[in-house]
Structure formats: structure tokens, C-alpha cells
Length: 602
Image (cartoon, rainbow, N blue to C red; front, side):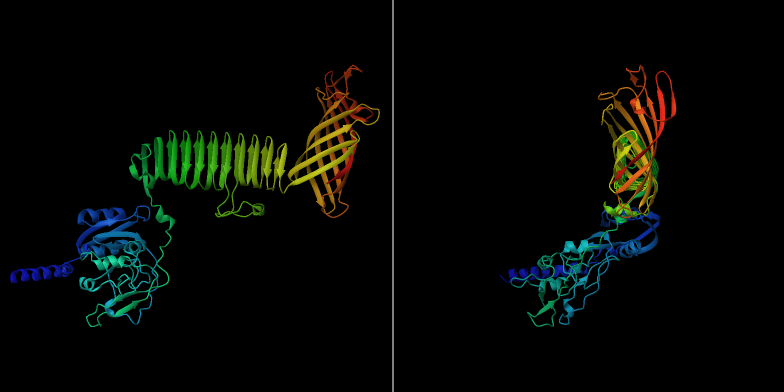
């Protein structure tokens, strides 16, 4: 019986002393001595060498860290800790030791150290483990779990085995370290105990208490550990760090990653890129060609050619040519040429030519509203000249140059020329809009009711981007009295040459197809061309839209109408006119006379 008691006591002391023995072992993997030489090697290659040659377990994210920063180092028989501190200095990267694994993370700004609680005993301070250059100082104000502590870059606290054994949970409350320090991951120097598990369950922003473990303190005494009101928030990642890239002089691929860059295609900027079918890369700084398509995550600076499509994630600075379409999820400067369509979601300073349509988007952070017409500049400065040419239509919030399409153009602000086969739509025009119909919100909109020497009643609708140039539809009628009834429809263009307070001077030119002799429509050519010089007077207020207009006219009639009564080429419109021009042949007559025009404009 005595032997059994002695054996149990010996086994008890053996198990109780195991943590202490573990604590006394030469602990951290960062204490290993290494000898390395690097000369302008990428950081990723340095980390791979340390992992392969010295068994260092390293975890990191390729997308969150810039691992292409160069490293130059020559050390002899120094600790891994010293090597890591030197390598990661000034690279915006920190590290934490979790167990025997080094976890790299983006550097965080340090929080100011909170004031210690006067009631906290010295034995309550948590000792810190190994931490990188960017770790938070001991005494950081937030208490977080081990996982959050690693992600946020806070210090990892280490509790000695003796203190772990002494720490016991109180009724209804989890046990925590007495220090206001951050977090609770173990240092890897001893086995995990129940006290550590309880420590990981501590909630943020709640005052906590822990039993005193100092041998000199009264048994059961409790020390309060204040917790700051705000936890440590992860810093926003710089965009450059989130998109690490490397540069290659040339690459060739069959499709996507099936090429010389392999799985690193999406992280590589190529000087020369050839893709048999299609390719994917971080960007191009030179030349890229593909049989079907090219896809680039960021920027293309140079020339990009594809049989079907080119797609760029950010910015174009050069030339894009594709048989089907070009798409830029941003803006840029250069030329897009496609058989079907071109799309740029931000302003493209340069040329867009397509068989079907072109689209250029709005500058970032700029509302598509009234301030477009006020010359607001984009986020990259004032926009340069632009040209859009398409077989069907063009769309752009701002045009500084030329917009030409076979069917229609749509724009916000136009500083230049709009030319379309059917109609133009714009918010404002600082230039001219040329189309059969021009709908400009802040443009020129007028209606004229006039009478001339040839037409007792005439009506015209004038539309334009500005008074400097407008187009109009005109209709006339003469069917009063005992004379022959005739009417005409036509189209004209005009300009306001002078606008001074109440006075304005307009010059209009129009052409009217004359229909006469009681017939609905005269199939023969019977064209009345007229030039009008109209002086306008605003009777009520200066600059008002309502004006009386009057002025001289010059008419030229070109007719091929055969008059059965006379047996000659003749039009009744020229009857009783004093002709200054009377020329023609057996098939066509050209007649000219002077006249007048008077009416109102509103």
C-alpha cells in the first residue's frame, strides 16, 4: 500500500513539472541561427528560401501583401528573428508568431498606449511573444480573441505554466489575464491549458476581473483590468498592396494560364505578349496580340490586337483593335477601333471608331446632371479632344471634338460638332449640332409664323444646339380666293448673326417642294428655294423670345412640272413675279425673283 502511495505521488509531481520543463526548453523557432545572402531578390523568394532551408513555417496572402519588393541582405549566424526584422523593415509588412508558425500581415498603425490601472499588480501583466515591426505595443487597449489578435496585428500574450495552474474560473465569469494587453494566443512554449481556453472567450468592451496569482497577494483577491472603449480596427489596405504584380519581358500562351507565365498570369505585366487563342494578364506595357481575345486585369499601355475582343480592367493608354469589340472598365487616352462596338466606362481622350456604336462613360465622382454644362473637370484633369464615329449611334456624357453617327448621337455636353443622319440629343452644345432633328435641352427652340410674297401663310419650327446654327421644318399654304390652291413642305438651316438686347438678325435658307394644280402631291421636281434675312425686334423685354420679324427674301424656283394647259414646263408660283432670272431647257426651268417675309417669332 505504501509503495502505491509513493508511486502516485511521484507520478503527480512528474506530470505537474512537465509544463515547467517545457517552458525551460530553448523555445521559439525565431531563435534559430541562419546564414543567408540575398542581392535584390524578391521578398517572396527570400521567404521561400527561409522556409526551405531552415524549416520556417510562414503564412501570408499573395493578394494582401506586395511580395515583389527587392531585398538585399548578407548575414552570418544571426537569429531568424533578427533576419525577419531586417527583411521586413520599411516594407509595410508585419508578422506574428502563432505556435511555431510565422504569420505575415499588412502593417497597422499603432494605437496610443492606454494608462495602466493603479490597482493592477505587477504580477498581472501579460508577457508578450515574438512580434514583427508593426505589432501593437504591450498594453494595447482592446481585448480580443486569439484569431482576431493575429488578424489585427496585436501582441500575442503568453502566460507561464505556473500562472495557468493558479488561474481558476470564477462563477459565471471567464478568466482573463490581468493586464489590459491584447489578446490571448499562446507563444508555443508550453501546452495549452484550460485557462488559455477561457482566455479566448473573453468578450470585447466589457470590464473583467481575474484572480490574483502573485504569491504575496491575498488568496482570492481580485484585480480589475480596464478595457478601452474601442477595439483595434484593421487599417484600410492600399490599393497597390492588394494588387501585387511582376514584370516579364515576354510571354506566350495557348489559352489563359496554359503558357509561359502559368498560374502567375494574372499577376504579371508583360512587355510582349502573344496568345494563340486567348490570354489573361495583369497588364501590358508594350504589345499584345491574340487570335480570339485578350483580358488584362489592370492597364494596357501600348498596342492590343485581337480577332474578337479586348477587355481591360482599368486604363487604356494606347491602341485597341478588335474584330468584334473593345471594352475598358475605366478611361484612358488613345484609340479604340472595333468592327462592332467600343465601350469605355470612364472618359476616353482620343478616338473611338466602330461599325455599330461607341460608348464613353462619365468621369468618376462627377454627377450626370446640370453641372456638365458648366465645364466641370474630371478627376484626372480637363478632358482632351475626343472623336466618336459609328455606323449606328454614339453615346458620351461629354464630347470635346466630333461625334458622328449614321443614325443618332446622344451626349451631355458638346464642345464641338454633332453630326447624325437622323437626330442629335444633347444637354447643351458649345458648337453645332447638324442633323435633320436636333433636340438640345439648353439649345435654340423657336416657332415662326410668317407671310411672304409667295405664301400667305407659313409656319416654321426651329431647333438647334445654339443660335449660331439651327435647322427647321417649314410648311406653307396658298389656297385663298379664286386662285389655284397650292402648298409646300420643306426643310431649312439658319444662324443668328447678331443678338443685341432687343435686336437680332437671322439668315435662313430653306427648300420647299411645291404641290399644286389640285393634286395631293406633285411628283415632278418643283422646288422653291428661298434665302431670308430677318431682322427681329423684342417689343416687351430685352432678350425676350417673342419678336416681330421682317426682311427681304431671294427666291429661286427649279421646276420640271409639265403644265397641260400651256403645254410647257411651268409652275403657277412664278405667275405675276418680276423675274431677275429666267433660264432653262425643254425639261427644266430656273426662275428667280425678290420678295419679302414678315411675321412673329416665339
